Length: 381
Image (cartoon, rainbow, N blue to C red; front, side, top):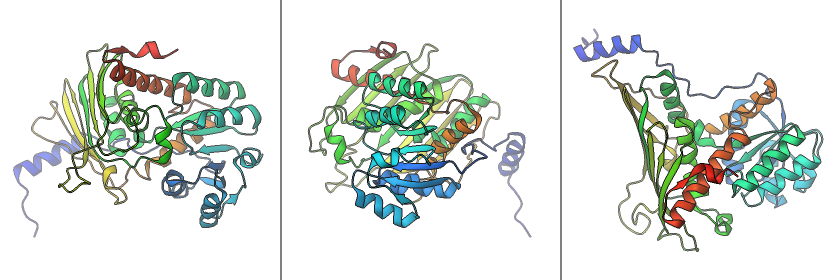
């Protein structure tokens, strides 16, 4: 005999019956999944994220090349891919339709422009974020691909984190009303790759770019930025932007802010740790809060979302899912490019759209450097 339900449990079931919680948090997949994909790069992001996600989704990676042939060979042998001896050889492989790039951002623009100039058989490119380390270089990539008729998409994979996408859906449905304030609090320790030591910006273009693009996804591109930064005590190589704090101002009155704390206290130096990423969005009709599961990687820890709305007072909705950001979100970033090829449309995260994310990164970096507010549009040139 089942236990009688409490009044609150019964009320919750009635409310959930009225509200469709079948949220649109999964990526839209193409009908045609057999576009032949050539992979450039054989590091962590390709090995542990791209390829597992593509095989999971039924996509068709067929070839790989890397600056170090032995690394490419190891992945090729593991997954049954053709291994090209050089990146140039892979680019010239006329059987490939899509090029998936996973190389450092300081060398990516020249690679994209080389493909656009010489590989007319290529229909689409999925580039890493950041697309480039400046708006000017990013715009050159976009223009080169446009001239060549190549669809350029950018791997801003946090847009496909399940909680980020679920929040976008409830914002679209109007359950929170007009956005008033959005915040992201990151207390996590990144693994800075060796190539990041050569860049003029560390946290802004490598880590904060995730949150800046997410705010753009949720609320659009802001008008003005106020930012502050300081070096991270743990990161031993020279850098300017370590711990980043910034506020984004919108013409609607909405404000967004993030604390990108890559220090988090001496968690690696002997103290107890408090590592997490939490977000919160408040609107005129409700609020939502969530967590990002990425800091627990490689443990599969789903992100979460809870939300409440004045239209159904006295109740917190708590949808949950099994998918995780790493590697499941990488299905979405490739899927949006393949859908664009299938439908002859712009990718959801097109290179042209991503120019505004690069401009926002430049605005944050400049605001922190110059100790003054910046207008985002002044960097869109």
